[in-house]
Amino acid sequence: MKQLSPTAALEKELIDCVKSHFTGEIKTVEALGGAWTDETMRTLLKIAPAVYVAFIGNSPTDLRYCVKQTWALFISVNVLNGIRVEPEKAFLIHDYLIKLLNNRRFNCAARAMQFSQSANLFSDLSAKRGLFVYGLYFTVDMPLPADNEQRTIDDFITYYHKFISNPNWESLNKLPQDDNNE
Image (cartoon, rainbow, N blue to C red; front, top):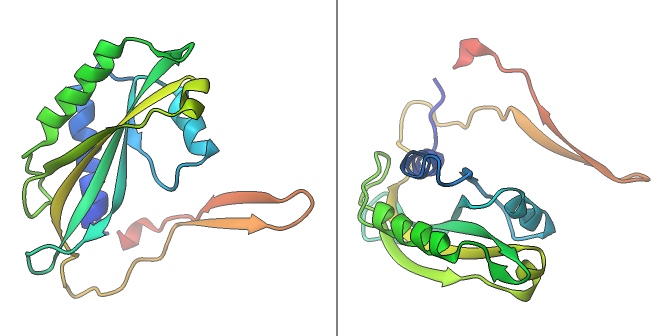
């Protein structure tokens, strides 16, 4: 059986926690990876209100064999003519997420998650595109992967390929999985 990394396990727990708490209230809760680009903005615009979970990075902690991780939850709400649609709902989502996640202990974490700050990520560009975003930031001490008999990373089953041609194109390919190795 393949072992899930502690970071991947926390991402799943965060998404599941938010989904179960906001059933019927938020249209989507999913992971958001990578840098903020035009594609990110298009993703955020697809469905609102929505919550996107993003791993930000690691820093040192006082616990041995652990790192302090920073996580962000981005709340997106619709904007009409530069004005938030249902601003009270956006604030309620913001406030309830802090209440839900601050001091929450996740199965894969070494300590409870701590709220660190929130930010109004309003910009003229996002408003023109019909989007208003709040960012909530949390930290949590996470164990590093366990030292066990298997000290290699499994073969990747997905790979990215970019072709330089006219026109340029990209593909994301999934390799067949051998169920006997799981």
